[in-house]
Image 1 (cartoon, rainbow, N blue to C red):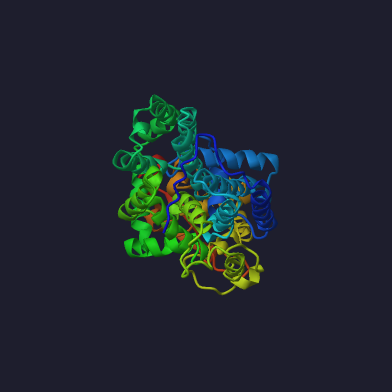
Image 2 (image 1 turned 120 degrees about the horizontal axis):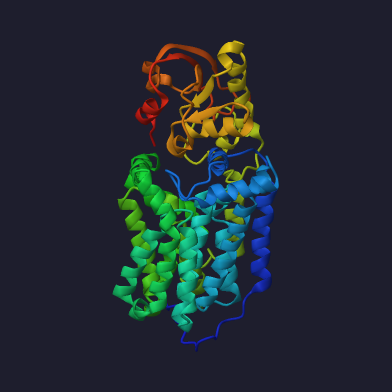
Length: 495
């Protein structure tokens, strides 16, 4: 196998395959736009909208950028799922273009650039998250931008690129804190593999200072509230069993990459980068990030940000002569077409009618069910509240046991005084001390000892035979509170 090294002078690059790359990006944008309003809000999207109504420098479970973005998009078109998801669509379109730019920086010509762009376009991980306004949509794209800036710096040594990487990092830190892991591994990889000159550049550390300063408000919020993000990290690690823990981490990572095109080009790309002294640190960074997140109990989709550079390197190798016979057929249009058809059959995007999800069991990967039924469930809460006698309803409140249900109530029934003690929603405020009866959605076991009477009065039902995570949740009426809310909230609040 030959390497991807290209002894080209600074500034010398293959021509950008502008037409075909933009055509691939446009096709992805059209596909995501076509299905963006097909079902409804995903649970986390409702949460971002609720958090946007309580803007802060930080939240218990995330930095502040996504709630702010959700608030802005909902202000432009209130209640529009399709408009809410426009930034997510643009992010995936940007990922397609950045993958092509990475291939170009690694010396790839027209074919390599199109192959890299096409690999993102048929990646289940990018398409599935790109359909939603989610932190897992934006974080990988920012990682790709960082990688491109570093690869470009290696070629032309322009320190303005390092300052730009600090700005991109600052933005990434407002989405997730995972980029800290990227930099921790990347700096060690550069120290071990080179180019060590990068570590001596003041612009690199100046960019780091920009990122750190931009994150100070969020860190101060975390400090004032007892560092809930650290506890959230432990919760996520504990939840990693849903993906098979460490055993299932890499297999599911490969599924997210794509079992055909993405996985093969990813492996080829790692080998090619390891054989290229100038870019070896990229392969070591990708492998190191995988090991890091696997050890700390991260989720498989955390790897998405390091995959495109591997795909780009693999695409460059695929465009060279002497490709091994066993994988020569992979970087060809039939393989990409077959992968795209498989995505349709696997319902990675919400193309099938809602009825196709009826009576399906809860299982990993079918997150589309949780885009269905929220608007139909909230009337059950409204009905329970309106059934209260007028003198009881006057000072009654709604409390939910999970943050998705609270977010749905706040969005679809803003007239109800609603509160929740789960995850970031617990920091939105407590019920007023003068409140009385509680219409509670969920398991009341945590609150029941503080009340004199607990009676079930309803159940959530979306009337669509689609069992999302809230389907069948009971509704209770809690009366006769004996404990102050401020004390009670502290005892029941959890992540």
